[in-house]
Length: 581
Ligand SMILES: [Zn+2]
Ligand SMILES: [Zn+2]
Image 1 (cartoon, helix red, strand yellow):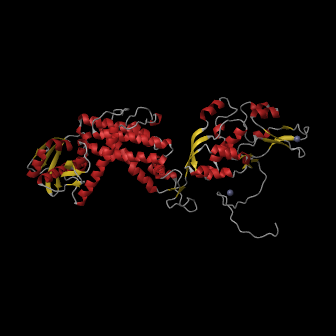
Image 2: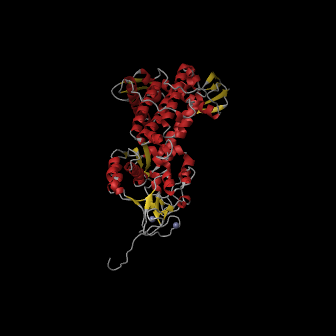
Image 3: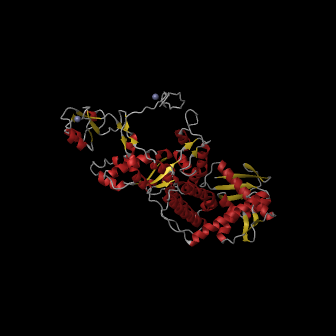
């Protein structure tokens, strides 16, 4: 209006050939979605959005100002618009065709409804008939446009069954509609999330379906940026190739990272190191527990029911597993993926750093208690595989098949049942948490005076009066002879000759086991040990002979005055030993 002016503005480029793109106003076909705004808003009120703010924020606002849908595209490939128009300029009569049967009847061309008609271009454009409206002066020809491909995406819940025309499509739709859950990224509020709802609203308006929305729950994902929070783009050169990451760390590592990094709706600043950490802190730890289990149990099927064990560590890990099952299930029911994933990762840590580590000697001991430990660990690994299945499907299947879970795949399993913890189990979890807090303080006190954990000490006083079996675990972990109850957590760091020689024996077994490892001996190789040691150490070893033999997996220990094959230094004492298989 008025004088033309020069006006500077940005314009987009073709992403393939960088040619400038200019907008032109062109006639096109629209669907009057603005007339359905109330229906769309009412349907949105029934959808559970995660994160919740999308409902009235990004999506709700889009619906409040809903635009008419520019449905036509001037392309060749695509779903042809089902509109036929008279070629007579004075008539321009037009019809919208509802189905192939309708088209066959209207056009008089029966083969259209025969079942093997390809309803795409160019074939569909060959279907025409003379216009009755203007007494055959014009011909009814299809308009040239095809539909916006988002219309196809939005038609998915119906089109996948050929609803309403295909045989059985009615019962299929009844069974599968509406969807319980869908997930896509945040940009889809104007894309798929919207067009699913829009097509359903149109079909409801037409009386073809009764119910909208077509989905009940949505997890709306944040976008992935580079590690500095910058959008990834080719021109900036900060794009991460997902295949490279998956080939290097595994697809499950990437999955688990995204699950537990932050809430699904938050943007994710992608740093490869974080994936590496997930591997090291969770997946490798789980695999190491797996390998440890296989060392002692390589053929039996893992138990499907919780073993009955009197051992406090078994009882504890089973209680923790039940608690984790309960919490993970609750979180998943509420679409709290991050919390669920983190609980599982925490459990794997506990399993490795507390249950397995504190049970190592039990596994080695042989006998009934070793059997209980093996059965318990097998059962726990099997259950963990089931809980991990939605998060890390490949790793879960690997664990499940290696413990011989039963089915061909973990993905054929039923989800685990929630069971309220018994009062005793809840108490045990609480006690163990407190025990570990005491342990942490005690180990810090040890470190403060520079005494290695290998050196056994006299006693630890704890502020909680623990049961005897928990006291034993604390004593083992802190390496003290006695745990007693008092007013403050205090490690007795006084040394005496007896403690020193006990510490020496501990160092002796550690070094022998290091040597066993060097010689590639396995737990199945029992050895006969010949040792040349000073008298002080000799009498110390003799005092705990059975224990030392078990610890170094020896059939016999023989003392000798002669120098032996392997020279070792124990806290500045020189000894030598020979291992005979
Ligand atoms: Zn181009
Ligand atoms: Zn006509």
